[in-house]
Length: 481
Ligand code: 5GP
Image (cartoon, rainbow, N blue to C red; front, top):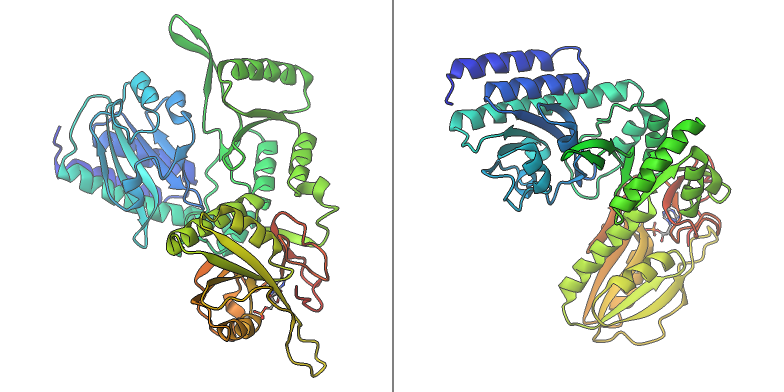
């Protein structure tokens, strides 16, 4: 099995040439996958990119793997070989028995035994993975590992080139996402659009989902529907999977005969896989669904003036749960007083307190705001109960210049709490004048005026379930709280 370094050298030569060619992302990655598998005398290879939120691995190039294997279901990055996320290589001797393999039954059906995976790194952090598959149980030599690490480095450059190309091509959505700060990591994760859509309406749908920050995976799973002589005779692959909502979505065209056929398949799918949530959607159906969450063209009456969604309802909920877990862990069994300043904090406070697993009491204050009339800031509503000797967590919707928070912290400290910390959902750091320590931060946001999830503009928009940016030019005078 050991090959001369010359054969790896010629494979690398072909791979780097393809990387430097004018091929598109998928074609380049398919070529790299094929040449890597052949150089290592393996049966298959797959190149995967982490999605921007580092939650799923998405196929961008493959060789030698069946459709059923490729569409075995969403590949959760944290469950699928977590060592890769740590930047380490992973070797699996027998994929059918290893609990690190997410779909061992499919590996068994496909006759896959050994797997070698290495991370694709950018600035030392994993942004994807390259995997080699072998039918027989085998080891991988040091030379093979080194070869695969070099190929992974080439893939990193290929990803970067594709991202640049996609943004040059005027992919507005991709650029908007690149500007958006990642709550998880400072390293820019690829914003590749890896899917080659079968139909333009699917691409429209993906853009619509992107616009509303709804996570999607394109055709991640095929469902076997009919078997003949032990072999699969019919399969169905829904167009999209939306992990946050846990639904598969199949888009329909307007042709009635296609709708009837799809309805038949969907009925079968529901019978065979009752745990799977699948929806057949026309465009107008989808708009109705979005309206339920407050987004989309039908929900737009409510969100007139909102330019784009910065964080969706699902993203906010996930972040709030993470913050609540951290706070619960940090305070252990202590009793905690949560203090909010009305009214912007109302949604955040309500959600946060429900996820805290320690005894809490809640109190509210209100403060006057700058009106240019020579008045100084004052407390218009003070606390109901004393905080002396108690652990206090100041809960804020947004910290902008930091002046309001500074004033409130000064007021609270004077009442001698046992401890005083700050938790803010949003941190508009770019505009900070007073640098106050923030103990828990939901999202760091750009210098733009945001509304929704409790935050208002002239008293409106507080009821939006997401956080959005107002259309430029609309904000004349930022009206707080
Ligand atoms: P400060 O500048 O004192 O840190 O923030 C004062 C207040 O201004 C915040 O508590 C909030 O009510 C308001 N504010 C600051 N930035 C924004 C924003 O982007 N949107 C909304 N709705 N209010 C904001």
